[in-house]
Image (cartoon, rainbow, N blue to C red):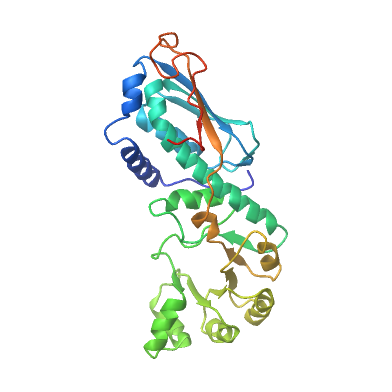
Length: 315
């Protein structure tokens, strides 16, 4: 692990898990409750089917415990650490019905979060040796922001403002309303400075070079250069001349981020980290080892009768 990702606020994780379990089994798991012997004990391993960076190990365990406190789940790889195909990331033992009920929700969380962490790690590696930080955006899955922001940190990235309540960030639509109201951006920034507390960060987005000087001169903390070409980013950094942090945003991709970082910007915000994340290919392989292992009539009732339900299974 290269950085400490911190933690997910417990209330946020608990709310997501409760909602997901209610969504997935609102009236119980009719398949497992019908087919699986009540005394069957299952063991399972969470295995990697592709390389990546882990995130959501704690969430994986929390889902298991939320379904049944008798489930024992142990994560073997720390959040933020890399792994290779074939690595065992976690082990699970407990009542088979409960393990099977928890399986999909637990996998969904750890696969998505690990996908975000892995993608972030690729971006961070691409800008190594520059001053640029890779930063996420508010383009997150509704209800999952705290988890997805944590996953970005697991990949070595940083978080932008968490919500609209955290900082002033005037974007193109704000500027359009100001213009239509006859208010210049420079005056708006100065007025905001007078009203805001000294701890509130002030950032403004621009999409033209001629907007840079009046915005910086008015006293912003950060200026966002939106959809600038590489040459214009170089010009923009020179114009700002250290008077504010410079953020590059818009259309950032893995094959362009190194060139963007080389312009000297301080921050590169990447919406794709969360809005286009691909779930990592992880699988939970289940077998029955308890009293019912030899009792026919249960799905997967013999040893080795695992569900094999990884990311590619239907449900």
